Length: 252
Image 1 (cartoon, helix red, strand yellow):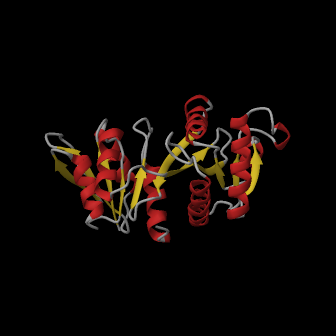
Image 2 (cartoon, one colour):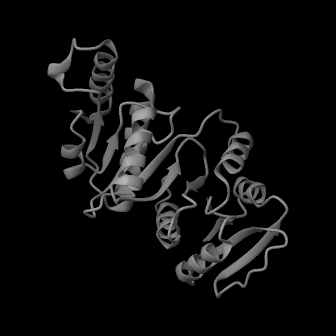
C-alpha cells in the first residue's frame, strides 16, 4: 500500500518516522515544500511541491495513494483544501485517545462545529464501532450528556443534552453514560461527547493537561482515508501504523 504524509514543520522528524514505519508492505511518500533538503530512508520517497498540502490531497482524491496523513502540514490550509476538493462544508473526525494510564478509546466530536445533532451522534457511533472493531478495541459505545438524569430541570441546556443523548442511544443501541466520562473510559471503545465544544475541551484537557496522548483522528465524512494529526506529535510511527490498519480493514 502507499501512504502519503505531509512534511511541514520539522520535516526531518516526519521523514525519520516514515523510515521507521516503512516495510515491504507499506511504501510511504513524504510531501514536502520545494527547496527543502531531505534524505529519504529505505521504503520512503520524497515528493516536492510549492503547495505540498494540495499535492497530498489531490493525490489522495486521484487514488494515487491509498491513504493520507496530515503530518506536520498546517491544519488550516490543509483541511480547508480537503473540504474544497471533497465538497463538504465541515469535517467529522473520530480521534484515537490514550489516557496517562494507557487506556485507549475512540472519541468524537473533536471539532467545535461537530456532533451537535442527534443524527450526527448516531453517525459517530456507527463509524466508531467499525473503527473500534478494526483496531481491536471494545465495540461498546457510550454517549455522554451534560448531567445525570437526576439533574433534569436544573437548566434548559443541560436538559437538551440529556434528551439528545437518550434519543441517540436508543437509535444506535449505545449506552447513555450521563456525565460520567470516567466510567465510560473504563470499558467503552467509543465515547461520544455532548457536543463539539465539550468534545474539544475534553480532548485538549486529556492531551495537553492530563498527560494523555492523541494518536490521530480519522475523517469519517469523506470517501477516502485521511488521518488528521498534531504537529506537536513526538513522532508519527503510531499514526502511520494506525492508518495502515484502517486501509487493510477497508472500513471507509
